[in-house]
Amino acid sequence: MIECQLETGRTHQIRAHMKHIGHTLFNDSTYGGDQVLKGTIFSKYKQFVENCFAIITRQALHAKSLGFTHPKTKEMMHFDSDLPDDFKNVMEKWENYVKYN
Image 1 (tube, one colour):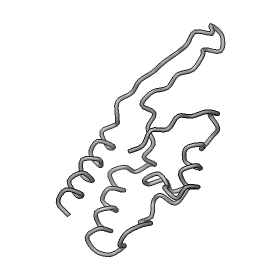
Image 2 (cartoon, rainbow, N blue to C red):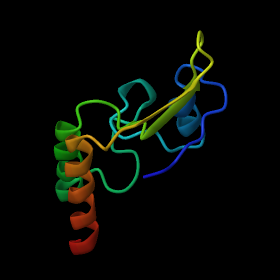
Image 3 (cartoon, helix red, strand yellow):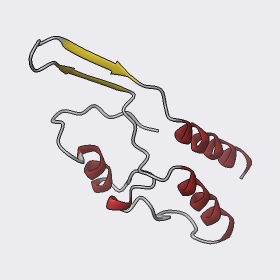
Image 4 (spheres, rainbow, N blue to C red):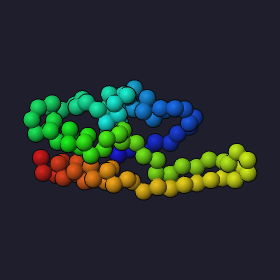
């Protein structure tokens, strides 16, 4: 899990930068994160990753916190959001996988 601070709000900013440094977002088919890129691609590990892909059927990108200045009222708007259940489920699976493998 990582934290990113956006500066420009450009489309795909996080996804493109993560791809550029060799760390695509989990299950991001546009940028190659839907492939087993590192580690063994055989047997138990591959099956584990594919099972996780089936749980998070989209790129693993979530905005915990968003803020912006309202364009009309100029009021600062701020929103927080908890992690979705699919993220929580996969994170728990990874924690257990690392602990026991």
